[in-house]
Image (spheres, rainbow, N blue to C red):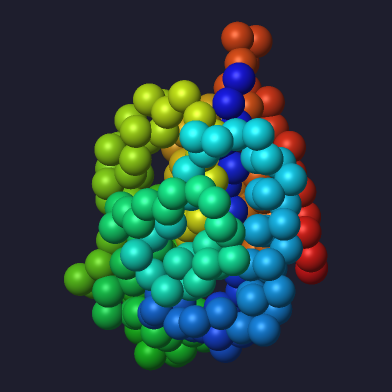
Length: 195
Ligand code: F6P
């Protein structure tokens, strides 16, 4: 059975400021994670010559993959974070204050809520379909370095979790979720590399 390793990018400068979306680089802690992740991957996938590293096209995932050497890297636009449209770059506090109706609609139905000129979770789930097809086809391990909303959706697919739970699934920073698909079903392990 081949593992799929899911991880968010290392902490970004926008994570530190509490800003959503954007295309920030990593914070110092995020850079530390990128090196710890590379170490982990080297040990975990040592004999897995055909493994590959998939990132989004955003800097924070590409930078997180940078210290990983010896495996091919593939960038997917479909792995980009949920597009927050008019709210991109704002904090949740700012959205609550300046766009209270948007804030309230999202709170009421986070799965279906679509940001103005942006996406909903349902949109994200739909655009992930080609990624899932490709992941299912792989014979070798894949490391997916992506973003919170995207990883919630991917995780839910492989762990067989209901649609309505997706926007609430815990996908913390600096943690690797390893999914093994075997004949007896899906097994999961979590590795928290740092706080
Ligand atoms: O805060 C990090 C982040 O990846 C944002 O870029 C994104 O908008 C958000 O998480 C998604 O999480 P939620 O759907 O809970 O707002």
